[in-house]
Image 1 (cartoon, rainbow, N blue to C red):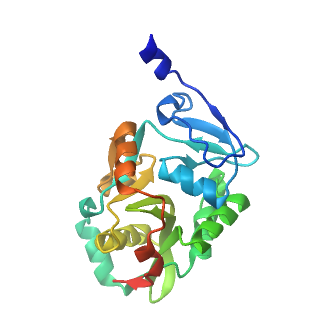
Image 2 (cartoon, rainbow, N blue to C red):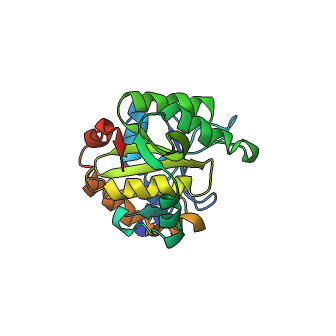
Amino acid sequence: MQEQENTEKELVLLTECIDDTPDPDKALDDPEGLSAVGGDLSPARLIHLYSKGFFPWYSDPDPILWWHPQERCVLRPPEFHESRSLRKARNKENWSFTINQDFQAVMEHCASLREKEGTWISSDIKQAYQALHALGYAHSIEARVDNQLVGGFYGVAMGKVFFGESMFSLRPNASKMALNGFCKIASELEIELIDCQVESEHLLTLGAQLMPRKSFSSSLAELIITPNKNQLLANLGTFD
């Protein structure tokens, strides 16, 4: 009977206390992974909940919804699969990569490319992650051809984990190029795990795998001793 009580599903209503932490194992099965509702997008709350494996995903006018899926799509940087076609594409043009040089532009591109689908990257989301960026927690990785921005992604980094949020490409392979380049320097940045959040065939072909919720939570506890920003990533401007 006690075991059944411990696994009972519940949807938590977050209070004004930024330390509110739902139990991931009690996240709903339908919709799968929904764990909490409400709260706010303040930097302190985002940092706290990201460090515990939660992420916000909702569309206006819905309230803020917080998710912790039963299986997490993750990528360990050394396991990125660089295909022959990707290497060939990189050698054909003058690719370069930057970090945090165009954070706002990356967010805007990610939002605009998903407008037809109903983007979750609302004005509130943009403001929230801009604030995290100013604090050194949110980062953009940009892919360029002849110094022109053509793709990239953004996310949140703390400890040895990078929590990916969204990617965009203005030409074929651009987001793959950015992710590939980032994976190649991840060890220098002490990044050991990239959270891709939700499974997709695209990510699985690049080497991502599914990790059970309990394993993911355990990994975060080991890789994020304290929810401090990744100073190495915050200070890096360009890479090959």
